[in-house]
Length: 283
Image 1 (cartoon, rainbow, N blue to C red):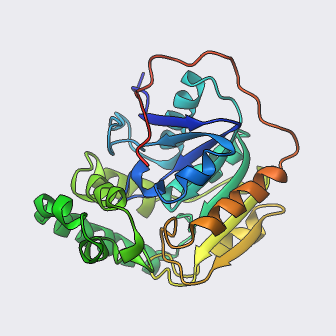
Image 2: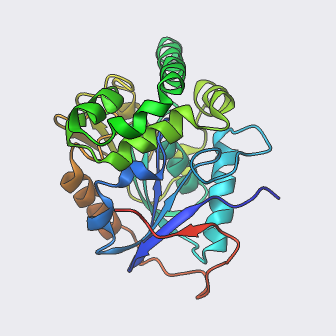
């Protein structure tokens, strides 16, 4: 069986799963983590092949990534969970909802419904970012120490990249330069992904997109007619990964989605597995 994913777990309350996008790691939620842990038991995961998580042995399609996430939730003693996802992580969040594993979902710029020209544009852009960041990888840590340096690293993803934390810049290095399965994930997880069965989703879903998101353009709203009861919330002055652009708004959207859930979320069992990589979240 594929090894479990790395998860940082902190806070208390109903379980909330954080799923980052491609080109980042669990560090991309640094801007919202302190507020989320005040209400939720937060599980912040590195997706396969990123950060401290092993790559998948099988093709990293969205269903396979979701399988790995589910195994990790099982090991953590969590059955149903609220989910906040971004980009590829948002697409995985919707797959978890389709399987009945999510109690509520806030999906920021989910991938999957882009048309062929958009897929080619995104694929070329992501591939170019991989090459550039691998080339300058030794410089990212020193660049992360200053606001101008972080802006240079994160400008494609954030509307206000100078407001980000050093952790988020390191996350970009982990997601682009250091990713151990970047090209397979780009091909199978993004370029060829076609969502199916979205009409079976029965939990509250809030679709979110930054108005300054040039990566995903207008594809998020295409999910609205496919997911029963879903809502759309645009984020002004926010980019593709807006966790640090509009942290208070994102936290509020997560809280509102959780409040709309039909029933409270309870743990599958009281104990937590020792098989999942564990660490204390850096804030």
